[in-house]
Image (cartoon, rainbow, N blue to C red):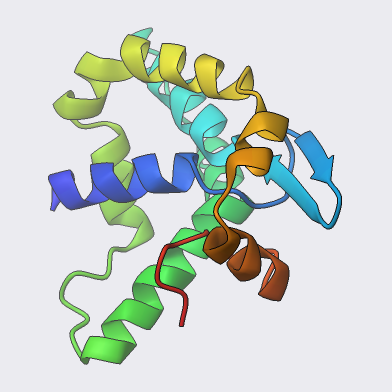
Length: 151
């Protein structure tokens, strides 16, 4: 479960959807925005935990209110519905445990450095290098995460 949550968190970190951290690139018909609000809040919570400070419910609610977290929950719910298997759908409590897990605490510095690198990424170049399939997916649903096999 922790490995799945970690993978999901990393994917949501990289999700290309609009929200608070707004590094936006427009390339003709495409606008790419990297939203790091969920990752930023997770790292803020981890920093509090590592410093031995209490984590208030307000901090958790800031995390759960981010657009990437909301989309993550929505995707997981839809996967459960599609496969009629809700055993892998996580709750907010599951995610809290994951955020405070040793796996995340041990990698917090590395995750923070990776996040900063992503914030400096050249989104214009990435948009210019995108394949036509990925561009088609973004144009059809600007909130979608590009894939090589759009439905």
